[in-house]
Amino acid sequence: MAENKNQELIQVLTEKFGDKIIGVQEPYGLLTFETTKDVISEVLKFLKEGEATNFNFLTDITAVHYPGKKHGIAVVYHLHSMVNKVRVRVKVFIDEQHPGIPTATTLWNGANWMERETYDFFGVKFEGHPDLRRILNMDDLGVHPMLKQYPLEDPNRVDKKDEYFGR
Amino acid sequence: MNNQPVYTDNDPQSELVTLNLGPTHPATHGVFQNVLQLDGERIVSGVSTIGYIHRAFEKIAEHRPFYQITPLTDRLNYCSSPINNMGWHMTVEKLLNIEMPKRVDYLRVIIMELSRISDHIICNTIIAQDTGATTTFLYLFQFREHIYEIYEEICGARLTTNIGRIGGFERDFNDIAFAKINKFLKEFPVALREFENLLNRNRIFIDRTAGVAKVTAETALNYSWSGPLLRATGVDYDVRVSEPYSSYQDFDFEVPVGTSGDIYDRYLVRNEEMWQSVRLIEQAMQKLKNEPAGIFHADVPDFYLPAKEEVYNNMEALIYHFKIVMGEIDAPKAEVYHAVEGGNGELGFYLINDGGRTPYRLHFRRPSFINYQMFAKMSEGMLLSDAIINMSSMNIIAGELDA
Figure 1 (cartoon, rainbow over the protein chains, first blue to last red):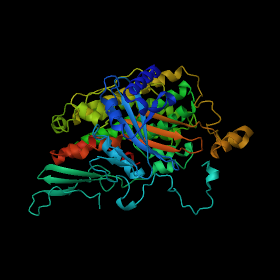
Figure 2 (cartoon, rainbow over the protein chains, first blue to last red):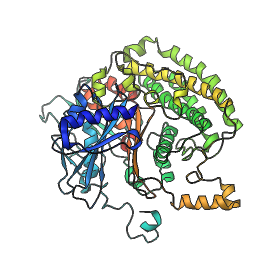
Figure 3 (cartoon, helix red, strand yellow):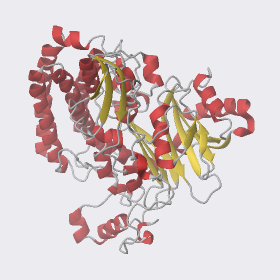
Figure 4 (cartoon, each protein chain N blue to C red):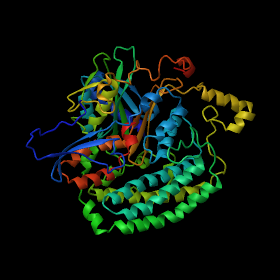
């Protein structure tokens, strides 16, 4: 059932945005696709306000860091259409050196703290965010700690080698 | 410093008073902060600052094997730790495509509903306490203790439970545990009925709560509210119904909704949810009778830690134990989002696995964090005393704010 909805949805999106919708997958039945930074606002707006889509609920915004790639930070949106009982995951890969992406606070007020958290941990600058400050870490931390280059433990410890831990 | 409040009024002649709200909520002694600008008793503006108990769980989780992440989830919403534990276990089981036996699902339902009750007991009694009704608080709160005794019987711990394992429970419920659950099912409804009699039609309580901090469904959805707060505004969204996990589809229960989204409705919704939880536990106890006894975990030796006695006496168990603990399991490269209905709303786990022993990325969708962002905005124009009950009615758990 969910698969049909997913296919309909991806059809509607491809009609509207063409080749801006890439990397369509369905891990565990949850429709996942990638799009680009320049259309993400329109994609989210379309998903939220389109009659066929109706994703009224912003479940979550977060980011993932893939070091070494040109576009090394993925901003991940989880949306939920309570009416159609379907979820969707939207990813946008952005430049690691200058991570910037338009804000979603224009569509959902709830995006405010989610984006602040993402900024705090990954340094993603949400353009147009009303109050983009750190939220959980202290102001003078200086780094964005969830980036993969920052180790968790004291790197001088010799008893905890990465290879023992499958990393 | 950036996190200091931006005062709207710097005029030294200003009549506004700056107040650090608290301590009213048990966490306002320093775990989170609300700096308010007051005009007399009325709040002009407020700034919420959180993060004082940030413990970097998401970072730690990237360096821990799956089974060591369960104790981290305890410390999110520590008023209903078992829901977090089991939400995490179910996320991993979804990743690994493990089918759970029905009996385990029902045992989980019992524990999760008990924790929902304990979570709602805290919230509702504290609302009453903050309106000045100490009796109700002291009266119902003892049942939280009874729930903790049940946890203790099952896993040995009370608050940060670390209950269960990936793949089921570490041991079966013993007879004392079942006896305690039955005792609870007999005694709790009586007390809850009396609790309701003391408050539901209580004139003082209604005057303090009805019509206060009203939120419309549109606003609540726009702020990504979930759980009892959202349902109090009239939206019947409950993860247990919309995407049933742990065999919730086998149960007959109702999702209570409010109409006006004020504090009184939130109180009523939580109370009704406690009744529904009692119903769910009763049904689960009935269903357990039809299930083969003694099954308390799925048959997945690759992922389920074997019992200690087995490890010491049995070659195969020793190998599996070693493989699991040393991280030689083959979890698929995949990403999975799993949501459960926590005490405060949709508790989501977004797990990206790259095939290694530890998650590549784990993100917790923490309902308190998302619900709380509206608090400062809501408080504008509100009386100070109303803001305090409003905070209680949102059931803000500091551990879930900060992760």
